[in-house]
Length: 584
Image (tube, rainbow, N blue to C red; front, side, top):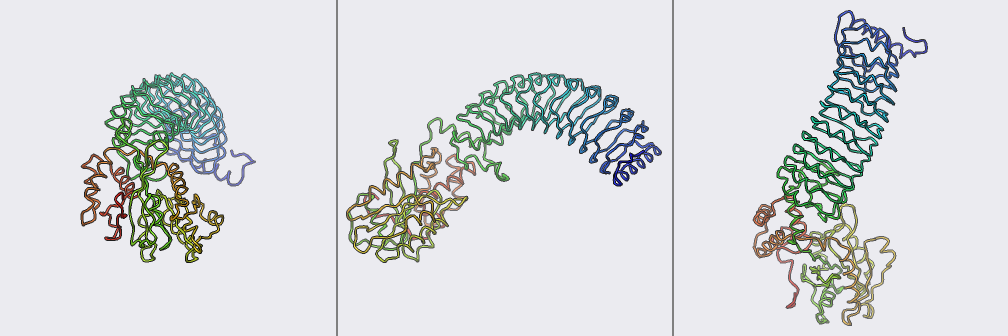
């Protein structure tokens, strides 16, 4: 009978359960569904269903079970998930026929040792409970093939789990484990082992004995090293080591001949073992967020943590790039595009000439379109950096052309003159222009030096509110007062530019020989009258062994950041010219 302290809703749920139990008894049915009734108590009459094989009590509000449950000796499947059970009655041990037991999403604090008497149990789900420890008797469940202990508070595992010889899948993710017993290596039939989101500082070498293992997930732990014995997992298909503290990998991982997925995002890797190149079956390799490897995002492919990845970079291409660099088959790029903008007559061309140590010309013709030349700057490490200088026309009709060439990886000089007393408006105009078309995906503007030109010329000294401009455009790196006729500020401008070059990591980015060959081939064919199509570009890449589409795209991006190619469809004919000088 229902208790007197039950609410009206609880009475209705209890009465409905009694009704269904009676109907099941009358029909001698083998299946009874009492899920989602809002039950807080289970009618003791449930014990009369001696022939019941399946009982569903999921999604109720049960806080305890009547001991009569132990009378269901024919029960093979019991679902108690999503209730409020804090404990199980010892009578559970009498359910000798039980094969499937679901207890997930209950606030279970302890398990009765009698659970170990369920000799026929094949699947046990104890996920999302409050368990802090496990009874050693779980090791007696000889028929168990799947055990889910994820999302608990387990700080340790009983070594008796190693006795579960039939276990195929073991879920231990999202616990508080700082170690796992070596006895897990005795689980000879285990194919999947999930240990993510724990506090593991190491894993035992005995895991290498799990030769049937196909998936090993160790994501989000504190692993500083891996035992070389993991190389014995000859059937491993997926190895997930994201978000650990690994600085190196054992060379023996190269023995995992069937490995198709290797995840190493968010570690501290400084070097990769050469034997990784032997993983012929590898289809996915994620090495993102290992800055010491110096692998660019485009080489690695899209970051799987940020967006769906319709394209995955070929592991072979990633490793070839990395090992070619290790073998000295790359060189630092040591190049950057330097763009000068400003109003017509502000003195951009004079500044370019001054930086190149060319004579000052009193009347310099206005630039039409864009004038191109190279400027070599000595690097702090003795390696010179080539700045590809783009002197952009200040004529308004050409301004719409400029954004085609603005990128976040460029270095900019805004040239101002007070000759027409529009320097404040010009500063706002060009800085907004750069901000809109040169910022990165996060809205971060590229480095800009503001050259205050014709400083010594009467009536031409540009006056601007430097503090306000810097507050409005925080990507301004400095102001340089210049007068090219007397060489004022030329050295200061070079120093400011060099300081920014040292802060731009892609300037020193490793450039593989194969990429250089593609670039040379494109430059050799740059005189062609027709723009280079995408198909033709990719064909040139493939011809020079750059076969990965991601690397092809990245190389195209680098070239766009650096050099003008007449094959580009964005550059109208006749808008570019080389600077006039033998050294240009």
